[in-house]
Image 1: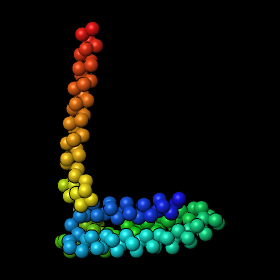
Image 2 (image 1 turned 120 degrees about the vertical axis):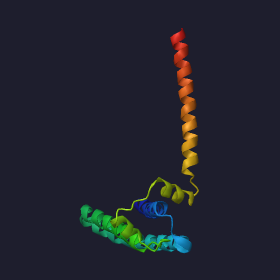
Image 3 (image 1 turned 90 degrees about the horizontal axis):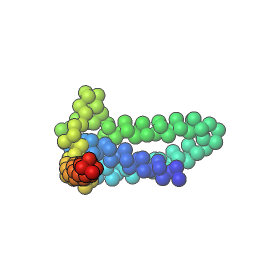
Image 4 (image 1 turned 60 degrees about the vertical axis):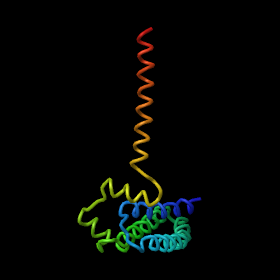
Length: 142
């Protein structure tokens, strides 16, 4: 079961990087697929050794897992292609963090339209507020 969570975390880390820095150019989708495959295989191998180390020390096994995910994040940031030829690692070092529009554009790659979802949520909230106000007015009128 832990292996499934590790593999899901690998996919989630890739999706976060691609949502935050979506301007990957024409080879971005290929990079995502190949990188995801390589890191899944790497985590399968690391998971076996982590299990053996965890028999002796649970903290050492946790440290190995954290180091593997840190290495993965560093490798993604250093090698992920960008349209402006500046690596994500360089952008992070220069404190050029993604803004809301960039993240919205990145989420649209995965079929999530953030502005539309926010607008629908706002309308639902306004409708609930109107219902609550009507109920309060009815109680006050009684």
